[in-house]
Image (tube, helix red, strand yellow):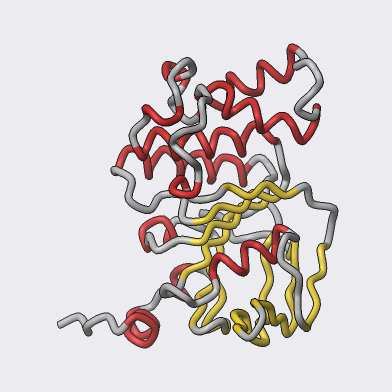
Length: 237
């Protein structure tokens, strides 16, 4: 996998959190442009808060964030946060990705429809277009949400645990689409517990207790000593 490109976003001494509950603490790191970055760390380490900061939906309490070019962010949430009771088909869910361009009230253009169809095709769910979201398996549902993000054509793609709990085929499909998106110029950042997916990224941020434990390529960051230190992994015999 090629090395990451120049910084797209730089964070300097960033702190963020909630009233009486700090999460990120003096975090200094960078997110390379047009590359895949994995944000890894134990539960409570600040992964989701960092994604919210990058998306611009969570304010800093101190420090600075510099964007080195104008980003249109797309934030793909975990599938568990989307209600099963929403009476939406897969095509309607993916079409919502075009609202950033058209708004929810304007008629879709021929290109909008083409982008929606292509996004479903890339995620292998074109045959599910007429199915209700609540009828889908976990892997199918997550692929629909990622397809919605792809349809938005954002240049900053943020995903919170996109492959957790999915079968191998769904994980591989999503990982391949994210890699292809980065190759096409999108800056991709995913928070993940999946170390296999993290090792397939070009850049890696390892968090612990809201602080940056390590940054670099997955080979540099996800070392045996780091995994033992952060997750108490047993030493390899």
